[in-house]
Length: 203
Image (cartoon, rainbow, N blue to C red):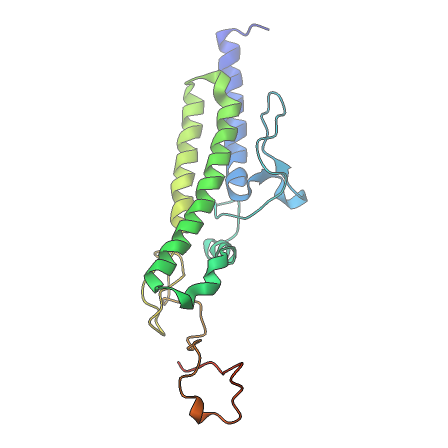
């Protein structure tokens, strides 16, 4: 079927608006209709599935997901190495944490960009499509910023803050502020089990 220029212009405008409306949800969840279990991102012209069929993690996107702090709190639990905090240098820990979180954002942005390109390729450099891609890039920068950890000194101890950068309130390392290493003064304890020595527990 051959379309005239006005028809193509109209189709491009409609498609760009449709994708713009869906963009925040796609970026936040990686799927559409997350409340009903999730609908994978597809090529709207041939129904090709372009991503997962269920939500894997939620990123903060205004008007699509929850508050940035709650989104970040859930994302932090996904990094297995968080449990090894006291086995590494704190600066390396924060660096590794940020690298992991930014990797999640990068993965989501690559998926959504592939979805956008698949659904706009036939419209070329149409102005509405260019506006859509600008909106995508702006959302991307916001998402990257919302998943960067603060890294300043905790208000209660010497560890580094795991709140979002430029957060409000005091810096918080998200620990108990108690020493987790084994006690070095076992003589101060009664009936010490040397196979399972007590932890220090001091502030």
